[in-house]
Length: 563
Image 1: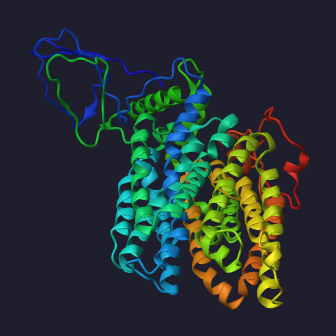
Image 2 (image 1 turned 90 degrees about the vertical axis):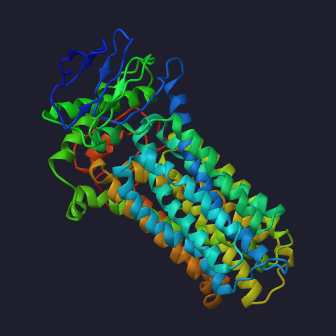
C-alpha cells in the first residue's frame, strides 16, 4: 500500500507541520514552538520503538544478541525450578527458622508448576494485547518480589506464597519466549538460537545448585531475587516481533523525525486513534514491522518476502476471528496435538521430579558422593549437554535428537530403577555400585538436554499457526505446567507406594512411548520457514529448501501424517 500524500500546515509560532494523514478522527493538537524553521511530524499509528539499525553487524549476530537478551529470563525460570532441591534439605536443619512437614515440602515443590498453569493461560492473552516483548518484561518485578517473600519468610505459608508468585511468572515467561524467538529468528539459525532459553535455564539450575553448596535457603532466595534485574534492562534494546506489529499492534502513537526541537513541542492524540481509511492503519503497522525486521535482518536486507507473508497472514486473521471451534479444524488441531504430546512426554519423563528432588534422591541412594556435590555435577552436565544440542540441532534436525534423547532416558531410568530394586527389594549390598545413581542421573540429564528439554518449546513456536499461536501456545504451556504439577506433587507418593524403583521404571516406560510418538507423528521442521510449516499442515505443497540433513532417519514415520 502506498504512502499517504502529506499535507503541510503552518502554526502561529512559525513551524511547518507535515501531516501524513488529514483524516484522523478524535485527535487534538496542542503545539508551542517559537524558533524552529521546520519540524517534520509523521503520524504513525503504531507503537514507539527507538531502534538503531544494525548497519555493520551481521544479521545472525544481531539475532543472536536479541535471542540472548530475551532468553536471560530463562535463568530465573531455571533457578526457581531448581530452588527446592537444595532449599528443602536446608530447611530440615535444626538452625532453620521453618521446618516444613513432608506434605508441606511436596506443596513447596509443586506450587510453582501449579501457578505456572495459571500464568500460561493469562500469558496467552497478554502476548496478544501487550505484545511479546512487554509481556516478558512485565514478569521481572514480580519475579524479584517472589524470591524476597521467600527470603524473608518466617513461616511455611509465606514460602508457599512466594513459590506461587514465582510460578505465575514462570508460566508467562515459558510461553512468551518461544513465541518471541519463533517470530524473530530466521530458519537457518532458529534451531541454534531457539535453544538459548533452555541453555540459560540450565545456567540458572547450575547456579542454584552451586549456591546451595555454600548458602542456606534464605541466601539462595536473595540471589534469586537479583537475577531478573539485568534481564529487564537488556530487553529495552531489542524490538517487538514484526509478526505482532502486523497482526495485533495498537496504533496510537507518533514518530518525530527531528531529534532536537529547540522549544517544547507537545502533540496530544486521542487514546484510541482511528483512521477513516483502512490503508492508514495498514501502512502504520507495516512501517513498524519493517523497522523491527530491518533491525533483525540488517539495514540492506531484502525483507519484502517476509513482510508480504506477514501481511497475508495478518489479513487472513482480520477476515475471521479465532474461536475455540477453530482449534478443532484439522489444520490447527494436528499441530496443537503434536505440541501437547511433546509437552506431555517432556514432563512425564520425570525430569522435574529429578531436578526438584535431586539432593534427596542421592541421599536415598546412599551414594558415596556428597549429595550437594552430585547435584552440581548434574547441573554442569545439564548445561554442557544443552550447549552441544545448540550446535547440533540445525545440523542433525529435531527428530534425530529426539530419538537419541528418548532412548538414553529410557535406558538410564531402567538402570536407576534396577539399582533401587536391588537395594530396597532384594536388599543386596550395593556399596560397590555407589557410582551408579550418579552415572545414571548424568546420562539421563544428557539425554533430556539433547532433545526432550529444549525441542518441545522450540517446536511450539514453530508448528503452531499464526492465527491461533497465542491461544494455542497458552493451552500448550498450561498443559505443560499441569503435567509438571502432577509429576512433582505425586513423586513422593509414587516413591512411597511403588518404591523408587517403580517410580523410575514408570518414567522409563513413558520415555519408550515417547520414542514411538516421535517416529510416528512429530514433523521435521529443520530449515523451514514458519509460513512453509503452516502451509504443510494445510496440505499445500512447499518448495524444498537446500538444508543439510544427517540422514533419512529424520523422516522416519510409522503412520502417515501431513508433514
